Image (cartoon, rainbow, N blue to C red; front, top):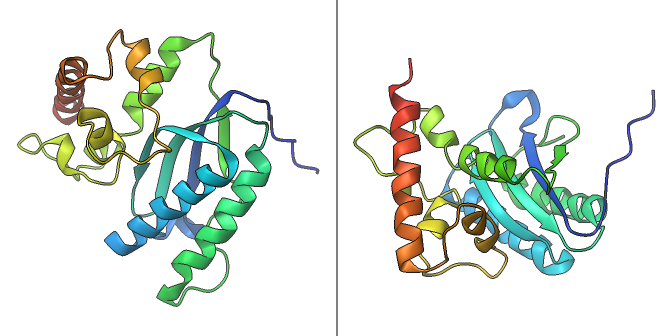
Length: 194
């Protein structure tokens, strides 16, 4: 049976999820995570993509990107191939990822879904219990949360204004404080849920 064609259009926002083959680790250390983000940055430079949220876990990743041009498939082909090359030094052979990546279009008419997704993605380490109640979400360096919470050292491909705007917040120190408080409350809620 033929695969369904990917939906591509200029200005689309997608939620991506990709897992390691057999759910094995794709990111073994911080060097791998830096290579991943460097490769994502290069893909954004080549394609014009804008990243609204991301998280890197050991065996999977999520990101929410906007494609100003209809170049999802070409960009992801380049990204995954380059990522395979970048992460192969660990002696891996064969496929790094389990099959086809998942790319779900985020409907722009459903603004609240964009916000829900922008919460869901950086809260992955909380749900995986990599961050406890006594820790700060800011301390998990491999998600977009630290880029939202502080303005310093943001890569050019990161775009916070869309999500902050949906929340009625500005990309200023005063606007980011309620965002940080809101995310802290969401993290505590996740951690205390039975």
